[in-house]
Length: 65
Image 1 (cartoon, one colour):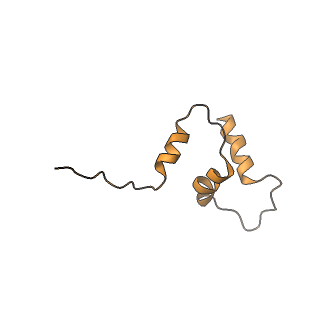
Image 2 (tube, one colour):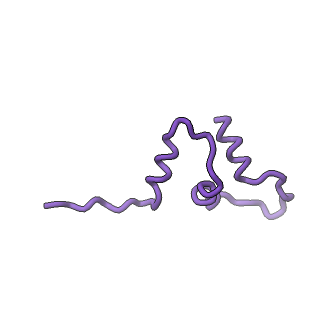
Image 3 (spheres, helix red, strand yellow):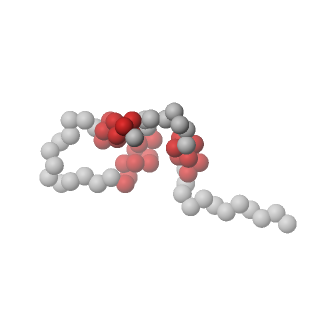
């Protein structure tokens, strides 16, 4: 009797895990950033406009890690 594989709790996890475990990846594309990171960020209501985009700042931090 074949048992179907359970559905993934997180859609797109295979795409993310293939990127996350690639040792050479030190940046995200804008599309990856918008899909995986941006939904989890909040912005202050009274902060001044950023001179750099959140995508660029995130990639700088990622390179330092």
